[in-house]
Amino acid sequence: MNSLIICFILFVSLQFTNGTEIEFNIVDVPRYFTPLNDDIFLSGSFNNWSPNHPLYKFKRLSSNLFKLNIDLPLGTYQYKFTRGSWSTGETSIDGSFFQNRNLQITSTTKQTHLIKISNWDDFKGTHTITGNVYILHSKFPYPQFNTTKSIWIYLPPDYYTSFKSYPVLYMHDAQNLFDKATSFVGEWGIDEILESNFLNGKETAIVVGLETKIERMDELTPYSNPTYGGGKGEKYVDFLINDLKPYIDRNYRTKPSREFTGIAGSSLGGLMSFYAGLKNQNIFSKLGVFSPSFWFNSTIHELADSAVKYSDTKIYMVCGEQEGSISMVDNMFKMVDRLTLKGYNNLNYFVRSYGTHSEWFWNKEFPNAFDWLFG
Ligand SMILES: *[C@@H]1O[C@H](CO)[C@@H](O)[C@H](O)[C@H]1NC(C)=O
Ligand SMILES: *[C@@H]1O[C@H](CO)[C@@H](O)[C@H](O)[C@H]1NC(C)=O
Image 1 (cartoon, rainbow, N blue to C red):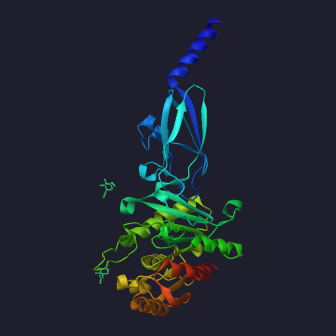
Image 2: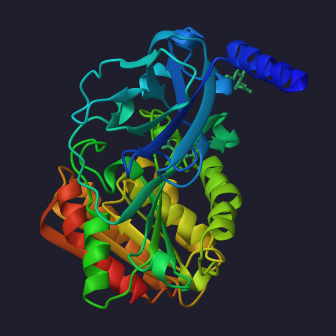
Image 3: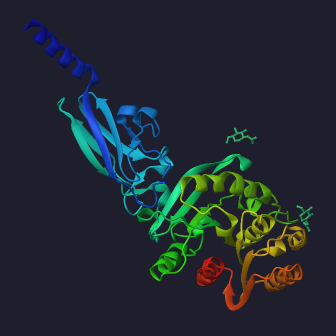
């Protein structure tokens, strides 16, 4: 009897010192915009509103389920969720300010809360994503530029229901590929195009997108320009080939060999796709070169001569007559001539009378390019 009482007193005092157990179950997060490698934190009046306190970090159970148990003394509290900072805090569905959540603890009975997070502050706007598009990593280490890079991924519709391995297309400017809200002036609609390919029984692929920010001019240009500078593209290529591609091949069901690996982009991204692809034909065999900025530095034309040529490398080039510069068309033909002279015969190139320097144009041209490169 005595020991029972002691046990009871111990139990009560433990409850008193530890407070009440509160269990938070996040059962829904913004599907496309909760980066797969980001952590979620609980921030509130009980931890001085720290947006990233390690003791308040959720355990990730799946891509949209998270769990955290804490103990709090009786009282009234306010709280919110973040992905590690206040610029990545939760918002209302339309991106507007979200009121603090309230928590009242009036007894020591365990509380369980089911939480739905509608949106995040860094992904406001009208989203247009379809299919399996994710931000794979919002802060992929990018030591070549002493920073981090956001990496996006598109997985074919049957990725999770098959054991298939897929070709991979690497693309630049990920923020413009899938979503209107994150894009500069419009999106390519890569997700819609490949979803439609799948429905029509055509070829699909995994698409890996590298987001570009302020370093873009440096990253995507292999040579410098007297007006615009740049010219650090070799470091970007090093990251893509030696850090990112091995990571993707380790973590996803890819066909990693050159026969199944492509690179594509537009403008400076077209220049970079041509440069990285032609120079590294041991890695890439499919080059999608849209409205390439060959004008940036004419040294690019010499690459056709110096690159080690593989006979099956496919190069697709397209530009428009309304891109605001005659040299776009001239430069492309000049490159075609040079490549033809060097014996590249898997070349497909077009000049479109309606072509402008815009995502609208690249969206229109992408299906043809993709089907030819991967078909
Ligand atoms: C890299 O960035 C960090 C902080 O962002 C800075 O402290 C450090 O000096 C930088 N290193 C180099 C080599 O630039
Ligand atoms: C082209 O790039 C090379 C290497 O970056 C540079 O040395 C050269 O000056 C550039 N040419 C022009 C016209 O800027």
